Picture (cartoon, rainbow, N blue to C red):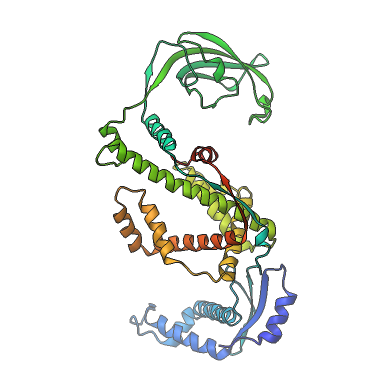
Length: 447
């Protein structure tokens, strides 16, 4: 097998047939001798497995095999030879393709060299620039004893029960209500509910709705008058004044559990003491605080990189990211049966573009900074993950025995190393903050 002269036909065709800046098209060839040799080897292999009437298995003559199966074997054989020629070409030229190649046969005649074109996308040529212009506000905070107190309160709330009371509703009560809403004297879809349970203070309802329940008692009937926001999701209700005829059925107050040994042991604290619980809670909070600060910095670095660099994204790379984002969206729907086709590419294109662009830039950072995986960082990351479980040592062993999991952590570690290298070049300003402030900005933290 031989590759066509890249300095003549291949290069000329690459330039004249290029339809976008990342698409390459080259002309290659496979010698008649290579085709014949490979074809004979495939026929011999097939003769050992095919069944032909009148012959025992493995005893079918090659000419009979060729008569009956030659066309399909030749097609498969030539496909493999084309891919091998393509692989040798990109290896010789040190090209990293961005997606699968497309082959177009140009000339294929018996006992003659075959000629074909191959089309493939490449990654854009990107050089990192202006890293020193990236501005980062790095939040600095620590977990205080008061933060631990607040978190213990949150844990108690998560395990709380509700008790019905004969008292007026407050902004911390849980109420059960019936209501019927009207706009312009007409009832509207979604404006009626019976036995609706509302946790006050969470602002789930239209602004002003909850405040008009405060002070009311079970059995009270009253009107709630509100105005739908201008950006309300239902077009026919935007900016409209509404009246809700409301009946308060039940008022409940929260009962928090005591920090007993039994309660504390639910959180994996074996000795059941408040002191040990506080230590464990503080550790978890510190770990999450570190992750939030790191992710905030990472987001700012990514934003800065994208602002400083502009390049095209290979279609194949973008499509892979779109498929990945779509898959994650489908997983968020859980057990709901949905056809992936009902979620078109357009829903995920912008997010996919961002991911693809960041991936290309980080790959270039790894190359330019000559980074290799720091195994110490990998071990630290595995230890941090394991620390969130009841038996960290077992989790660490599980990771160490699983090659795929360890490679995934290595990829994350290498990305973090690239981010750290860029951060070292950027303009970083430390901004004093607090756990509670970062909790407001990242509501999933501490949960």
